[in-house]
Image 1 (cartoon, rainbow, N blue to C red):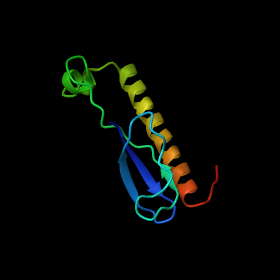
Image 2: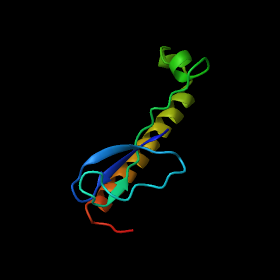
Image 3: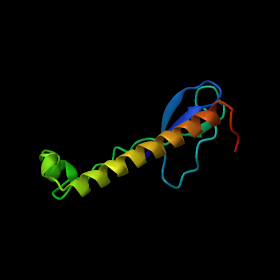
Image 4: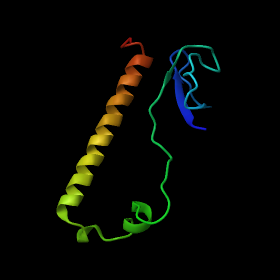
Length: 101
């Protein structure tokens, strides 16, 4: 069952909730009953077996990889970090009452 993170707009506490994928989002804080927002967080999902980064590529010398591969993977990482930063910033604005949906 997935673990979702929430942050309360009233007391500011962050907490986790075990919820099924089809379960509705939580609406209130489990501590103070204030309104909560669902947070976007990094996954703990990991692929195992051969053919994946962790098993086949992690320990190899990056200087042996083709330059285009390094550049595109770095660009993708920068894009992903930028996206997560933007989403987290927007969530903070909503939580702090600076933006309302």
